[in-house]
Length: 129
Image (cartoon, rainbow, N blue to C red; front, side):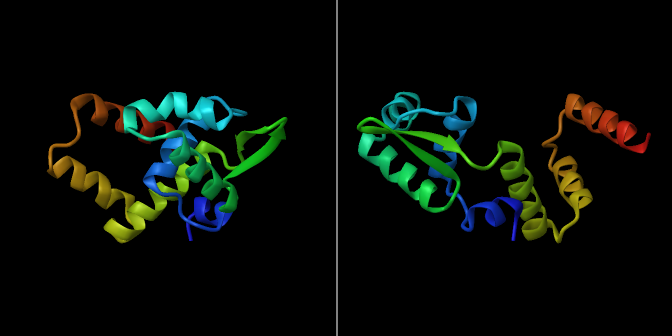
């Protein structure tokens, strides 16, 4: 089980992730405020956002704090923990747990730019020190 699944109990869907990104950028928002950020670009309604927020609360990914007749939503998991868990899950599922195999695949398919390679080299140098 990934770190994100351990914290939430269930995997976060791609749509739920879009909502989480909005709240990671600016916590303590209402459903309407979240909708202002995502509804136009995704073609969603406020009802869709409310459904996604409700699911995320049920999964333990968000807290819903009453604020008058509305709720303020705040992430209960950190973006870094989620990304780390999902990255590990991807490497485990597609590359047999080998991050080196992932990098080799990206290099072989020419998905890495010269800048990417330089950044990876710098990271490796830093890790060796």
